[in-house]
Structures are given as C-alpha cells and as structure tokens.
Amino acid sequence: MHDLLSDHSSVVAHQLQPLAHALTAAPNEYSVLNWLYYHPATTLLADLAAQPAQITHALLDGLAPTRSTRYVRDALIATGALPPRAEHLNRLEAWADRTIDRLPKRQQRIIRPFAEWQVIRDARRRAARNRYTEGAAATDRTDIRTAIGFLDWLDASATTLDALTQDQLDHWLDTNPTRRRGLASFLRWARQRRLTTTLEFLSSKKSMPVLFQTEDQYRRQLRRCLNDGTLPREVRIIGSLVRLFGLPISRIVELTADRFHRADGDAFLTIGKHPVLLPPKLAALIEEHLAHPRYRSMVRPPAGDPPRYLLPASRPGKARGARATQKLLRQHGLPTLAARNTAMIEAVGELPPIVIADLFGIHPGTAHSWAKFAQASWTDYLAADAATEPNTTSKR
Image 1 (cartoon, rainbow, N blue to C red):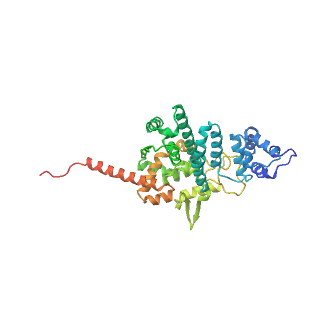
Image 2: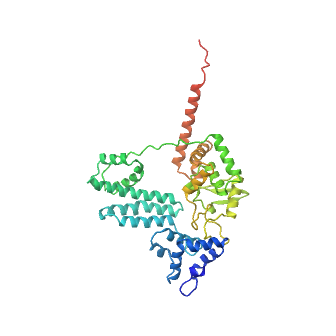
Image 3: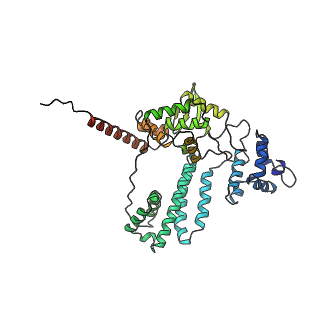
C-alpha cells in the first residue's frame, strides 16, 4: 500500500493519505491485495503518486479517457482527495470536444455551436439543479451524433443544410425513425439561426404503454418486496419504489441518501419537489440500508461518512447502473416496466395529475397524459362490459 501511493522519497503525499486510509480500513485485506495486483487502475495510480505535481481534475482530464482514469478519479473523489463535480456533464463536454475535433471543418462550423449552445448549455442548467443523470448525458450524446449523421447524409446526397427540401427531410425521417427526436432538436436550432428554410416536421404520435400487470400480480409482488427477507435488501427497496411510485430504474439509482429523512416519527423520501410519506416497512428497509451499506467497491468513504447514494456501485462513490439493476430485478422475478405502468395507473386513479407531477417528479404534461389514458381505458372497459351484458329489456 505504502509503495503504491508513495513518491520517489517513499512518502505518501498528503493528498493521497485519505485513499491510503480507505484501502487500509477495507474489511477484507486479501481482496485489497488482489485489487492491488490485478486492477489496471493501480498502475495509473502509482504513476500519478510518483510525480511531483498535485493530482487535479485538470490533470486527469488530460489523460486518455479510459476506465482506469475514471476509476482513479472516482476513488479520489470518494475519499475526499478530489472535490466532487458534475461528472456526467464533464464527460459530455470532453466527449463533444474530441468528437467535433475529428469532423471536417465545414461540419465543425455547424456542430460545435449546436453542441455548445443548445445541448451542453441545457445540460449545465440541469446539472446546476442536480438533475443531470447518466441517462440524460447518453441522450445528449445521441442528439449530437444524430446531427452529425444528418450532415453526413446531406454530404452524401450532394446537398447542404440551407438547400434541404421537404421531400429530402421526409425521406430521411422515413429511413431513420428512431432518430426523429434528436433531429427535431437540431433542426429547431438550425431554423432559429436561419441555417435552413422553414420545413414541416411532424412529431411522431406518442404511443401509450401496453404492458401492465393484473391487480393480483401487482399486489403480490409489492407484498413480496416489502416482506420477503430472502430477497437482497436493495432489490426489495428498488422493487418497492417502482411499484409504489411508478419510478423508472434510471431515477431510482440516482437517488441520494439525503433525500430520505424522518419527521415526527414518519419517514419521507423526496422524489420530486415534495417529500412523499413512506410505508413503515419500506422506511425500515431504507434505514437499515443506510446504516449498513453494502459497498461493492474496494475504495469506500471515510469512516462515519454517510453513503452518497442509496445504492452504491462497484465504482467508488457512484450509483448502480440502470441496466444492471433492471437485470438484477428480472433475475428475482420482478419485472419493472409492466409494474411501473400499473403503478402509474393506480396513482392517477387516486390523485390529481398535478399532485402526481409534484410528488413523483414527472412533467405535468406526462401526468395529464397518464390521467387521460387511464380515463379512456376505463371508459372503453365500461363500454365493452355493457356491450356483453344480456339484453334484459322486455319486448313490447
């Protein structure tokens, strides 16, 4: 340990002492030794420790964006050796710079301002409100890639953005239906700057969900999440949050520990703008999880520090990945999409849409769409039920 983090004078730098203490305090010393010998990040960490310069975010930004670089940064942030920052935003900015630098000059003149003033500026606003997630960053990268791909297509078609015709746009939309949303963002920006003519861009009709659970399935799985002690604790917490509040996995894994609190004997979790009252069994699960977090990382926060996330990941100081978490629930027989859709139908049947939006942290328009969908589905059900009833009207 000392050799890994010491410089040429065999002294562990003051900056790296919190990391050294965290590794020394790990409960399983054999796991630490295995990590020291085989994890690729340890080589980079040793190289950084040996140099006289202080390790900063700027220094790490200058290195190749490898998994080892990200792991070292996460470890230093988790132990307090580096200050935290909006990592999803910073990774988006660095990715955009690298990607745009490789483009032809004629494309750079369009893509760079679009990325900087449309995509990244909005990302900064969301990051300032602590609402910029890994999923949001992935969507923003897709939007930039879509704009680049569209310019590539224009080049291959021997046309330019200002000469784009309605027929050409319609053809591209027909052949690239999954990129419609990303292109809409780019063309709106281009139109505002008079880079293209006025074109008709019909938004695709949003389809409502089709996967649901029966009431018996929904209730049985919720009871299982709250009561089945054979399930992993994190599975029970996630499964309960999906079924009680209709939360997607991508939002659950980003929930921080400070959003849970008690007041006057009741437990609350702030999901959107306002705290939501939790059932006692779920509150007890979350309290136990925070008191005894199951870290999967070798590098852990300093002793006594509360976990940052409800669901720590294998990377230091990070939350679990949404895809891996969804797979984990499926392995335990707890599907998420159908359960979430059913939970939303249950919620809008009991509370006004605006209340749902405030409590669950969803857009008011989304809440109203769910309410309309639920009302229409119930009306259709009643009509179908009435049509199947025998005709009891007496004949005259």
